[in-house]
Image (tube, rainbow, N blue to C red; front, side, top):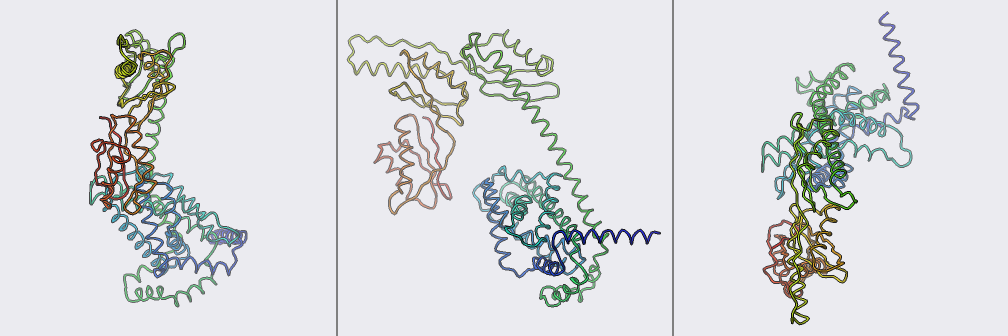
Length: 566
């Protein structure tokens, strides 16, 4: 009875395989050509493969270091790692031990070469920052496994089907499964471990290797299933493949090793098809353990982040409703910064506000009560650390004009304006660097890492206008970035290039408008003449004193600049 059931199941499976192959227009001659083409992907003597691999590894490593998704995607498209993985899947589907050995050797050498190049590049890079693109590939989870399973399936199907028009699925598979970037993350981690921090480096390398191993096993498994279902290894195909192996130099070398090595001879029978499937499924099952833990951590992090975002939204909504405006609708205060910390059942909030009217104790208590009601907590469970930055100051009157002439009057007005501007306190880390008198009003410039929020800017503009000893004056705020920024520098012979001069002209205009600003330049080490050219350009063409332009030769390539207040 059992033999009849087995025979019936094999018959049904064979009909399914024939039906799939027929619907995908994969006939016997195509299966033969397909088998040989996939098997040739395991060849070690393809120079173009190794060139593509090395260049893809270099591009991926630099893209990860630069935190550039576009560069990383380019490396994914160039990477040829899919070919030996597909040949490994075919060898497991057909039981071709010679092909399995060739595929395994090529995969090992490919991974070693990519990791070695990435390690070398990272070791000599002047910065060892773990960018967001690197960090994203150090914590794989079960979702990455399913992405790799689906990608491997469509990649195998795209390889098997006859060519019709433009193939669009293979580039998508290359981007989705991302084989090369995880390998370069491993090299990045090793580079960090050998030159900077062992603990951080090993953590990065471990996460990258787990992601690559997940992709490798999943693609191999789905390729094996697809090749099995399409019945690539028919009896006729096996006979022709056997002849191909006898003529192929690499296959002959592997067969010679097998005949001369008893240990390898014992490994030659890969086993029955159920045995091979069991081995691959066991590896997939083992990967589920660390990947499941990672998805649990991710779920917890997402849940915590969503709850924190909800709290932030409620805190801002309640503030705007309770204390953001006066009863007549006029703007009173702006919530500039907000920190949220949950300590068990207790909630610790850090609020920094810009206001033109100090809050009373009763207003603070009422705010906490309304907030507790919205968050479904007790007021005792909410601790609010509130920092108020007042913006309203009393303007100093203009000095008596008396017998002053027009020049003295102008200087007196400007002096009073500057004195009153300095009295208004800027919130946070913002630094006042100066002002300009325009035809339509006054432009006040401040130096900061990021611009003020819109409400905070409105409050400051209003308070500046109130403090100035002029009626109906318009006040504008100008944000100047305090962070390091790239600066395109180049020479045209013994002079600065026109584009470089244009960028320096803009910086010089800022320095001329605001005398309290200073410029710090970090110039490329490979062109020391740039230092004197830049300083001379500011001094000769813009009359900027040398003490306001500090230069440092320290960058490997390119240049960066920083604007600072005096």
